[in-house]
Each structure stands twice: as structure tokens, then as C-alpha cells.
Amino acid sequence: MGAKGLTIGVFDSGFGGLTVLRELLPLVGDAHCVYLGDTARLPYGSKSRETIVRYALSSARFLQQRGAELMVVACNTATALAIDELRDALPIPVVGVIQPGAAAAADACREQGTTPRVLVLATQATIESHAYARACAALGLEATEKACPLLVPLVEEGWIGEEGDAARASVTAQVLRIYLGEALRDAPESRALLLGCTHYPLLRTEIERTLAELGRPLRVIDSAQATARAVARVLTENGIARGGLAGVCEANRALDEVGEATCEFFATDSVRKFKRLGSRFLGRPVGEVQLVDLGG
Image (tube, one colour):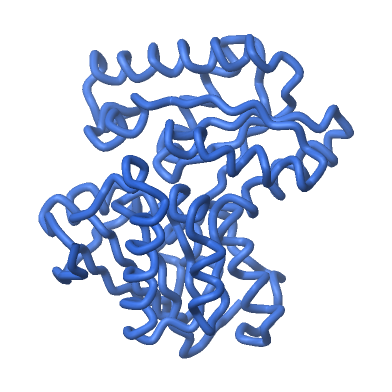
């Protein structure tokens, strides 16, 4: 599908939202995507709700000033605590990461004709917000939430798959086995597993392998992928995009096949670190990152 001339704003407190952008690029054809990583003020999860709302609004307004005609909140914490304020404040469509993930999990359970129960893996802050549990409940889905605080630093340090050496990758594998073992004991009737953190798609292969080893090969739902598809639907429903979802690229299509989509990157701190980690999350070199000051 195409979205010629459209500018899409995407923001997160850091790098994880780039997994959403990675999934979005094949779906928006020749759009221009502007990504902001608010790295000077991360992590959002340790802040008060009032502060998170203020940070999210300043990030979104910066992207709107850069021409964004649709806003993607590629941050679970900001979605959980600030999505209503963002929708009230912005005169453009706003898509978060939580409701699309919950909807995809509900669809997966319906397709399987199984008990509508899902296991959600997320950070401590997202779990404490219970945003996924509420979103799932609204869709008739029972959610068991599991906080996995060690996974984000392990991903950011590159202790995963082929990126790290065998010893480091084995540490991540063991951590996953412990978390998943505990979660499955708490939720033995779950029929799908929802990745409720934008870092976790980088662990999907390891998660699926561990589930199989534990004898519970659950359907894994990637909230980043679900969010990208939700954006595509919003574009179509608002008459911004052409052609609907017909012919949408597979989610793992190589980014060099995307076409005319362009990207622009901003960070509020640590540009060098953003380029290094961002390339890992985006799956291709990030290129130039511009430093921007959004204040305190």
C-alpha cells in the first residue's frame, strides 16, 4: 500500500520503538517517518504519571512540528499512562502499542478456538499499570501478566542470539527459561503469549525455542507487528493511504525491498549510543541522528 507524501511520527523513551518502525516501514510505502528517542529522560517507567504525560506530550508536539500527520506511541509506558491525553491534545490520529497487541492476542485465541487466555510478558512498569490486562479484558480475554525486568538490559547489551558470544547468549537463555517457566506455572491454560515490550521482538526466536523446550509452544504475538498493522488500518480508514492492506509485505521482509519510505531520526541524548543500538533494533544502519533538546 502507499501513503505518498504522508509524514508519520513515532516516539519512544529510547530505542525499543524502532522495532515498531521496523514493522511499519513495509506497510507505508513512500511515507516519511520521523522517529524520536527521548533518551535524555528514560526510563519513563520510573517516573510519575504526571511526568510521563508531560514527556509524552512534548515528544508528540515536537514530531507534530516536524510535520507528523499521524502519531505512533511506540512506548508501552507512554501508551499505558498518556494515550488519552495525547488523543485529546493532538488534532491527528494517535495509535499506541497496547490495544493492537491485545486485539491480536484475542484474534489468535479465536482462530485457535481455544480458551481466551493470554500470557503477557512486559517490563515491571508496564505490568504495574495493568494496561494490558484492562485492554485484554475489554476484548473478553483473560490476561496473566509477568514482569521480566532483566530482559531489556540483556537485549541492549547484545546478549542475544548470534550477536553475543555463546556464554553471554546462554545467560539470556537461562533467564528466559526461568521467567517463562514461572509464567507458565502461573498461567497453565494460556493459549498465546503477548510480547508487551518493544525490546522483546529481538528475543522472539529465543522465546519460541524456550517455549518448545518447556513443552508449551504457544502462539507468540508481537505487539510491535500488531501496532504497525493497526497504523495501516488507521491510514486506510482515514482515507490517507491507498489500496487497503492488500499486498502488504510480510513482516520479516528485508528492509532494502521497502521502496520509497524515508526515515529521519532524533534523540534527546547519547546520539552515538542511539546509532549503535538503534541499528540493532531497526535491523539496518540508522544513519544520521540529530540531537534535540526538549527540556526537563
